[in-house]
Length: 240
Length: 76
Image (cartoon, each protein chain N blue to C red):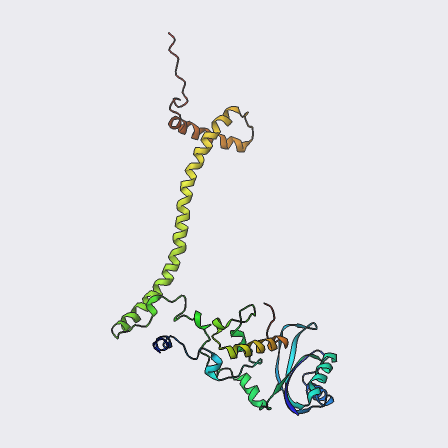
């Protein structure tokens, strides 16, 4: 007789979890295949990492039993045929452990002393990413209080710098806009003269509002751009 | 002899968490197994996990068992 560990994933929609129906189902399966149940406990009820037979949740039942060579083979067959069991995993052990200790170890996570909680060894840093370099521990005793004073000041300066950054970005954007605006009337003035000469008179009110402005801009800008013209005034010809 | 002494100080002992804590690799210990996998559910290499060869092999089997009983995802 060999010692085995069996983990059954039970479908909760098929079995009532409030009653002993789960334990009776598992015990019946093991006895049917020639095994002797040593201990059994409900390990966890949790969401599955992926869907099995369309189910998202399952009840994990941990069992320890003794059996022969054919026991596990028959158990696998019975679990595959059963509609209540979603998955079953059987492992051979050297000896049957205390099931209460196993359940307690699973629940007692706070007692774990894990030094590598902050990541793999080659990626571990001494401090968090956002901390300033002044937060590193100082070697000398005189440097330690100075470093302690510098640390809160650096912490205060960091949010102020964060606030100033978007304001600087807004100022840069606003500085760009006035430079762009004067370029527009120069472009429109150059293009407006040939268009204005060729275009027929427009009777709409909106065009009427726009045209005097365009005319005013063109009359003001044209002397600077085209020195040949005299501001639009016609000089009398000297033919005499 | 001098070469062994020179390189001895660069070796970091007890980088394997299972050698240091003397715990067995168990497929039911999902919290530890998840730390030794990427967010996509892939196994970390020995270089990244810091495990010794013996425990890396046991870890590989434990993660595959956890995936079989849907304690850990197979993809993503």
